[in-house]
Length: 394
Ligand code: GMT
View 1 (cartoon, rainbow, N blue to C red):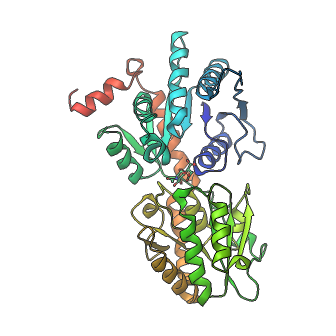
View 2: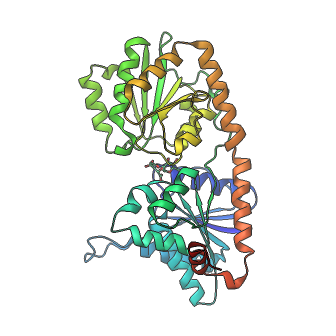
View 3: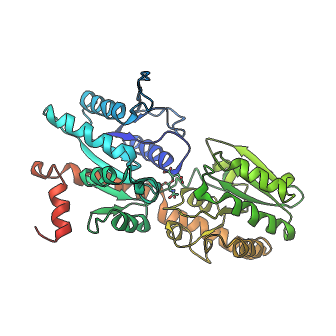
């Protein structure tokens, strides 16, 4: 198949998943064309069958806000036409699903066609998509997609609820990892953040407020009172300064290591003893899966998509959002009991490999693509299908 992939190129789960998917599809012999305004951050190696098309946005002085979505739609249309793409797979609905819909309609007007598959990742539905300036176009665009996927059951249910489309056909295809990339033994002893037996707690994110960075610092402040340890922070974003200030204020700044943005985290995760993800919300929590695959137990928030990744009491533990005391207690318990830590670490790796290995999950995307491409030509516009499903008629 010839597949176009659009995603955000910046550090974030949706761009990481889109890139890993494209690379795996190319390894399986498909032709993959990435379309974005910059090279996706995980697209660091050349692989046969992978191409990158940069979206150029004209900065005309009249534009206070250059219309990226239009430039993206034009590039999608151009690449789909020239490369004869079978389908466009867009990651994160805003604005990619809308640009994909425009590109597909432009192609159809010229007698061509391309199928549009949209993967919902989280904040495109739960946060940004709920903003009144985006809600109706997001709903319209996801309904216009030929196929819709969500990365967790939780996100599928949120989409049904928040977009009032209780019967929209959404297939849940979880995020995935390559078990060979995330492998504790492979990088054993490479990084030593903890000296003299200190434990290493780790957090990796884009430091947005949804990650509850101050909670993270408070949890660590409690843990290090009991367990000699360091906190390693990877990534950057709006809340990073807050983390530094709070660590200073609590007198633990010398125990917090800030590494900033890094492209590859597998080697770092292999040196961690515990991963902390106390987010307000995670539709999945890709980084928690990467941690588990690396044999790192995860402590995080309950009642979101994270509960489908972390098995409470088995591969880590989940607690009410904001309950830093419970998270700290769980961390101390696990780090102070070597045999329990070993059992949880082993279970974390096993769950990641058994349920979320790339080989198995990417098969599901391929199957979905094939079923979309096999649809009858008179089924080109899914709106009647969705409307019929909604009213229970047809
Ligand atoms: O967490 C972010 O703000 C980044 C965001 C993204 O779109 O890159 O992550 C979302 O997609 C990831 C990949 O599917 C999920 O693992 C994250 O849980 C999800 N983030 C949220 O729901 C907050």
